[in-house]
Structures are given as structure tokens and as C-alpha cells.
Image 1 (cartoon, rainbow, N blue to C red):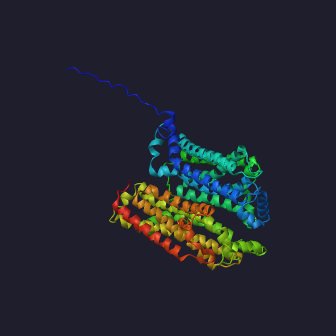
Image 2: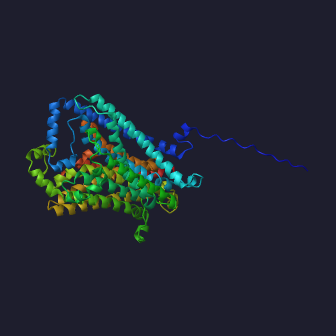
Image 3: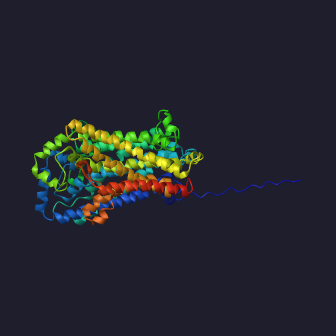
Length: 561
């Protein structure tokens, strides 16, 4: 009997090309670039559109040096309280200075939201889906894995900011109609270096914290850093507490670096680069040393309370509650500090009847010289963005039950899919109510401290909770009908989209039917007692319909796809 040995020839392996690696095949770095490209393209297009529209309007409405000078004189003559709310007007008679003042200097807030959402989940979000476990077992190692994920995000953001800088330079060149409007490319690039660094700060905080406490709570910490830094820089002139911490605000620390306005201050920017790098290093070390089973949507360990084990609603509420408390505490503290300065605002505004009359045109039926009037001006629009982000966080937690493959076990109990969907969705709505209640509590305490009206501002701020519930329900509906991975992104995109449609549409003077698509335009001016009943009913209807669609979708589609 003979035996033969058959030896198989080794299979040739073909390594991905450099181009393939950069586009997402065979490289964690390239895959991260690919995953982030849509958001980067969308934000770049939106920013350049806003810059182009603003520059066009300035060239159209202020077409002479006399008009520009008169406008600059009016802005520099505003009292410190308005300078804090609008920003310090530097060289606003020139196109670059105006764009820097009214537009680009606010972008770190909007882009910072994107940064902290993306970087809080670049590692922690992947952990919850289990997609990093196989990679972490490969020869890549955790450190290289984290470095490539981070480098991919930083690379796509750098490319987006570079395109924005070149586009801004082209727009300024196209609309530069008066002497002094022209700005050198080096100044535009220098200003966008500042934008790149400042937008990364909240993201770096979230990246450093997320491996330790999870994505949801990391978002809350980053949101506190972002909004406190913004508020401390904006309202330091009228709020003593903010004046004391303004040096710690990264926006205040770098406030004198305005190359578009002709002012350069590199040392604070360089120091901030070092701080961001240290936060990224801390996040990498934390990821390298921690176990991979880290909660990704902010489910912190809760006390062993039996009430949280009573059913799907109580369990989901127990998981959403830590994030709701974190967001509520952050926004409540912000509201408390702002509301406590209302008396100073009212006193200063009362001494300037011309400004009062101008503002009264936008609030014809409201008492501007009141706590509610001040909060409507100083708080309402800023908090709308945070409400949308918080709603996305809660919806992301709801979606994690399915995306983390726990729902299959839960549905093994005697319950229907639709019943689970309704009860767990109601927990998201209650979490939004808890967060809004803490915000209203902060407003109420601040109003009491200021010695102003209490009831009307407190009731008015609750409208934001109803708006947040409507946004959350839109995400719940998408998660139920289509797939859970889309629920949180859709919530965030819709919330920011409504804000930007209102902002850009007002600048473009779009027809009211188009502007009316922004749900936040139907809230009225509730803090001054001007409610929009139709808008409130619309928000409530969207909330109910969203939960119903979520339940119906869960009954009809496969779980886990």
C-alpha cells in the first residue's frame, strides 16, 4: 500500500494598493476616512454656502465705504453687554473682519458638536458593535488601532477645513468690492488653523473620556466644556461668574487670533494645540489599558433599584437616566448662570432706548426689559442646538439594544415587538422630560437670584422639551422602520438641519413656506410668553406619530439588520 502526500502550493496574497488603503480597503486609517467623508463633505458645503451668502449680502447692502464706516461705528458703540452676545467687532468695515465677527468665529460651536459626536464614538461606538474585537486580536495592536482611527478622522477634518479655507479665500476675492476687503491667502489659512484647533477641543475631551465612561456620558462632559467655554467668552462682560473663568475658556484664551480681521496671536493657539494633543494621547492610553467591553451610549452603573427591573420601560429608563441627568445638569447650570445676570442686562438695556426700540421690532408683543426677554435673546437659540444633540444621545441609547444584539434576548420574554418599541421609546421621551426639567429648574433658580419674573421663563423653557421629544421621535421612527444605526444620526442631522435652515434661510430671505419646514420656527417666543399653539400641537403630533411608526416598523422588519 502506498501513500502519497499532496502538498498545496501557498496561495499568493495581493496587498491592497495605496489608493485602496486610502479609500478604506486594508487600512483602518483609510476606512475611517471613508466612513467620515459624507459628514465632512456636507459640513464643508454648508459652511461655504453660508460664507458665500453672507459675503454677497454685505457687498449688496453695504456697497460704499461710507455705509461700511457707519455700520462699524454703530457696532463698536454698542454697550459691553451686546458686545458679549454678538462678539467683539474688529475691523467689521472690511469684508474679512465682518465674516470673522458674525460667522466664522461662531463655527467652533457648530463644528465642535460634530467633533464631539464623532470622536466620542470613534472608539467607544465601535466597541459596542463588537467590530473592534477581531481587529484588536490581530497583530495591529490596540495602540496602532486607536492611532489609525484617530488619524483618519483628523485627516478628513483637516482636508475639509483646507477646502473651506480655499473656498473662503475665493469667496472673499469674488465679493471684495472696497479697499481693504482683499485678504491674503496666508491670513485665511491662519484663521482656519484656529478654527481647526478650536473645533477639535470638545472632540478631544470626548475622545479622552469615552473609553472610561462610555459615549453618552462623554458627550455630556464634552458638551459642558463646549457650552461653558462659549458662554464664558460671550457673557463675561455681564456675568461675574463667567468673567472669573474666562481665562479657562479655550475660545476666550484664543480670542485675539483673528487673522481675517488683521490681528494675529499664535502663542495661545500653539498652547491649545498642545492641550488637544495631550487629550488625544490620554484617550489612546485609556483605550489601550481598558477592557474592550466598555458601554458606548452612556449607561453608567446605576444603584440596584428594583424599580428599574419592572419591565422594558423601567429598564430603558434606568439606562437613559444617567445621560439625562448629565445633560440636564450641564444645561441647568448654564441656564442658572445666564438667568442670574438678567437684572444687569435689563438695567443696561433700559439706558439705551434706541436699542430697545430696535429689538422691540422683533418682539412686538413682548416685554424685552424683563428676565424672559433677556433669556429669549441670550439663551433660546443656543440651547436648541444642545437639545437636538441630547435627543440624538438618548435615541442612540435606545438603538443600542438592537445594534448590540441584546434585543433578541429581551424579545425571548412573552412580549411583542411593538410593545417593547413603545415602552422603550417612552423611556426616551421621559429622559428628555427629565433633562428639560433640570434646565427649567436652573432657569427658575437663576431668575430668583436675579429678582425677576420666574413663572413665565420657567414655563416657556419647557417648550424646548417638547421640541426635543419631536426630534427624538423622528429618530425613533427611522430606527423602527429602517435600521437602528440610522436613528441617532438622523436625529442629530434633523436637529442641526432645522437650525441651519432657519439661519441660512433668513439670510437668503427664502419664502416662508420653505422656512416653515424648520420645526424650531414654529415654537414662537415662549420665554416671553409668545406661544405658537399650532407649533406645539405639531410637536406633540410628531412625537406620537414617531412612536407609532417605530412600533409599526419593529413589528414588520427583521431584528438586527
